[in-house]
Image (cartoon, rainbow, N blue to C red; front, side, top):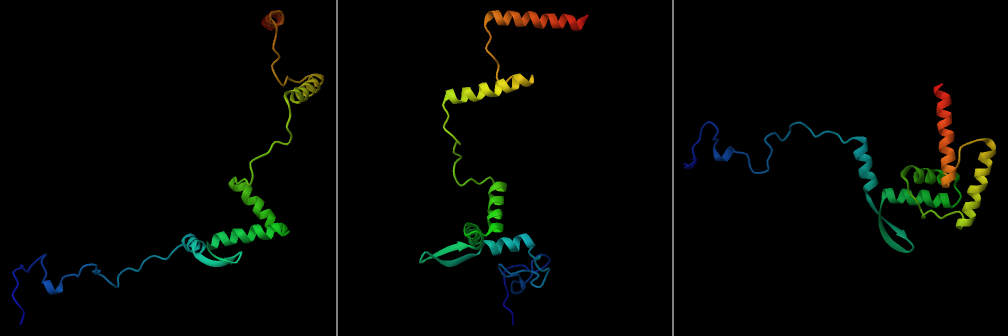
Length: 156
């Protein structure tokens, strides 16, 4: 028959032979796990590592890397929709292939000439100035007097 044990049996203390074993579920056929969503399944497929031959060598790449490489290569071969997609990705994610290069190497004299020409055009049209002109002391006093006179006219 059964061997007597020193452990008590009763409420909250089931017999040793019928207790749950370690790492065993109390409800093995219970509620099933939820289904994986679309995002999770897509991420698993894109993160899957695949071995491919590249330049005569075996290389492990993710499926996502292979897709990007294929898109870039087909765009480089002249596939216009693929090239548009690559440029769209570059624009949307702020990717830059090379650091921006200035269009021309202009000296201070060239830039001053450009600003002077633009200022002349704006002056002819009666628009505001590109830059604040540095005033001499006499010009500053004359400007202050003109501003004061215009304020007096508005008050009256």
